[in-house]
Amino acid sequence: MPVSGATILHADLDAFYASVEQLLDPALRGRPIAVGGGPRGGVVLAASYEAKAHGVQGGMPGWRASRLCPELVFVRGHFREYQRLGDAVMAVLADVTPTVERISIDEAFLDVSGATHLFGPPAAIGARIRERVRADVGLPISVGAARTKHLAKIASQVAKPDGLVVVAPGVERAFLDPLPVGLIWGVGPVNEQRLADLGIRTIGELARTPSSAVEHILGHAVGHKLSAMAQDEDPRRVVTARRARSVGAQSALSRRRPELEGVRAVLAHLSDRVSRRLRAKGRAGRTVTVAVRFAGMRRATRSLTLPVPVAATLTLTEIAERLAWSAIKDAAPCEITLLGVSVSNLGDQRAVQLELDLEPPDPWRPGSAQGAARSAVDESMDQIRTRFGGDAVGYLPVVLRGGGAVPDEFRELAEHDL
DNA sequence: TCTGGGGTCCTAGGACCC
DNA sequence: TCTGGGGTCCTAGGACCC
Image (cartoon, rainbow, N blue to C red):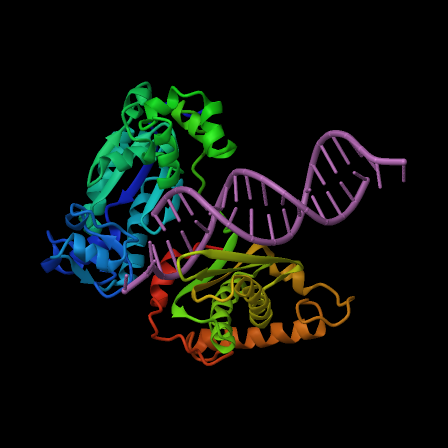
């Protein structure tokens, strides 16, 4: 049974990247700004509230944003600062309770049921968090408090910008009733439209719709979740540690005809990033998936599940190449605009390396002679990179550097812990 | 003049096993 | 002689989140 009281908090920094830029450069305060993008290409990574007022949103192409808001100022991101300040905010949260579930660089759930005797009721704790983040870090943060995670998250969205909303037990239904269904976690543009087609626009209307009808439109899982949510039955607990289930890397490319050397170079680079992250944490994965995006935004994926987990750079690269060409050939003739490599079905790498070589030679098997050689090469490279930096050695001349690729610091912001 | 990069979870069909 | 039912794994695609 859920704990009584609105003891689940959701803390969410407001327009995080943009707020950091305005903190760093006072000349940007009060002005519509966009991090990333630009009128000539790229996408907006974050928009300040002044920009949002003009309809500018994250993920929007830069040229469209500047059309919506001609006075929009584009700034390059200070990605290391985002990491540092995000961590500083999490430290403030950790002072309140050890039960913190960080779900991204800029937001987290807290279970404060054990902290009320120290800091007072949830409303007081929420206010304290907001004051301390403002005073110590200099950033605006919104907080929602409720009996469940789902509801706390909705409350923080309603609180934005720079606010606090507590949904007291007993008033949940009244609080949710008039809110748009799009505020529910898991309802994006597609499902919002599907519900609108049924005349369902508010959470109250959703709650009054038979769950069988909702499941029919949205599928069993989403429909069931929504109905449970609308009835305010949400058993999810705050989880402090969670292991990643997949690791990937992708790169948008300038539109090009797929050609052997270019595709190989990109896949080698991506495979290298992924496998290094795996090895650094002693992990490996059995399933390799390659994603290809074609001109016109059509995508295709190809995947292969191996009998044993892989974490070797060359092995991953070779598999990725096979898979990519399978997808490209099926779509030919075509131009490609993105390549991605990811590894899932993760497990412990150490168990793999102890495996005896009972099979015929096979470079994909870590226990085989070739597999062992590759592991040794990777190990040396990892060591060199640790000592001299990530660019000290590589398998192939990296033709990607510059070429529109985003900085590594930005990629690292979004990486989950393995 | 078309849109980043890191993830999670769900679905449906087919292969395969008992 | 031509057929049940349940379970698991794999693949491809899609919606969604930050």
